[in-house]
Image 1 (cartoon, rainbow, N blue to C red):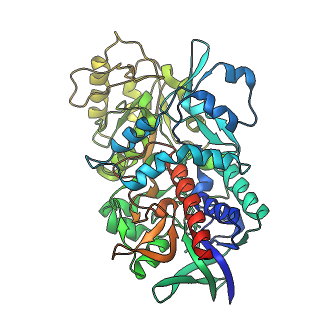
Image 2 (cartoon, protein in one colour):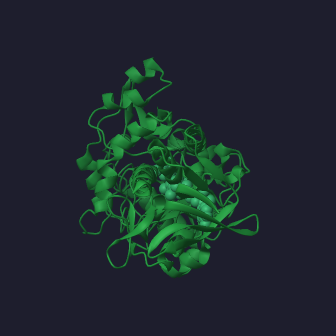
Length: 497
Ligand SMILES: Cc1cc2nc3c(=O)[nH]c(=O)nc-3n(C[C@H](O)[C@H](O)[C@H](O)COP(=O)(O)OP(=O)(O)OC[C@H]3O[C@@H](n4cnc5c(N)ncnc54)[C@H](O)[C@@H]3O)c2cc1C
């Protein structure tokens, strides 16, 4: 049997951060990954690499940027995203509950963790395409999310893996953790299935970083709700809840919102899972999150959310759920020519599903599955309710709204009056689950008896109590990196005891 100081289960962002941190402390580290090398990196690989973190001044970001266009940078306003605002954003989704220790850890360590990543050869770039608008000759960032890792999720996991290997870590693919090995209440290793054979690996400490249960239709139904087996899976098919199960089997406490998950409007005709076989950039193009520039109609032909309730990165992770809850679980997003240039590239994806017409009457005739009479009425009533006295400005909550509707649109409400009109059919795509394990400030997994489970640490999607009823975009990777780094340090320290 082979022995290590630290075994890390999974090879996504959280796992690789844990491995880097443990290696930094001189530990002998093994990373085990259920998928093959062509699919390593879990959900992290599908991401845009966007990371939300607190900063006081745009100047603080500049040291993280490696390949800068100096001229463009000089015309960029990153604004500020102080810790208080990050706290407020999280608390806004807590349904009245105070911030958890895990949320405080996420915010307090976010900037330092990004700096740590930059120090490990992870390079960042400003997200000009989706988080900034040009205004008076300047690039103005909005919504507190400014930087992404270069090369997006693909670039991130490749760079992190390179760093793990550079520091001497070992990675085994096609190696699925099935159970934790314990002795006298302490975790001493992992039993795995590797290429059809059972294998055991021993270590002084184990870090679970093998994702949530979003790819497991049965668990989704059990925890989130009856219709959730119908959701499409945006990312990896491998996050089946194994980490949660293995830890629960040895008495670990669970924590957080098991009904909560991150779910996004996606092309109705997207494949059932994310697929690493299609080119990287295309994987993300099934996402359809520009609803704030238009309206969404359900099968009854009615609007069902305030599409302009807040900046897109505070609503998109909740609106997938809102769509799933509609009759037959789908909706249509409708836009006119005026906003076409503002739609993200995903709306021009060669495989995007859409219909197009020169009048609203002709458009609604093409909306499959929708009450056409009501759809037309909704569009007409919406148009009449738009307050044309307020200027449209996507860089701020512009207050350009409708008045007098049963459900108003409270920002960015433009009339749908300039042909051609386009409508995109959307469904719910689940990204990841929020309920998970209880961990303490050392990222040690807590037992039901309130004590840390000796030798067991967790990070990433597996950590409960970070997100509840919503999600400020870009927080998942930061959470993975913050808890991953801490779990790696703690596991390495524990292995030396
Ligand atoms: C399409 C998409 C876009 C996203 N964009 C962003 C973004 O831009 N910014 C952001 O902050 N977040 C984003 N997210 C969310 C983000 O991906 C997650 O919050 C984060 O990546 C989770 O990291 P993780 O390491 O916990 O899990 P993962 O990256 O999913 O890694 C888990 C790993 O564990 C492996 N595994 C599972 N079971 C086992 C087992 N039994 N044994 C061994 N290995 C196992 C899996 O194969 C996988 O490799 C996005 C997610 C998706 C799907």
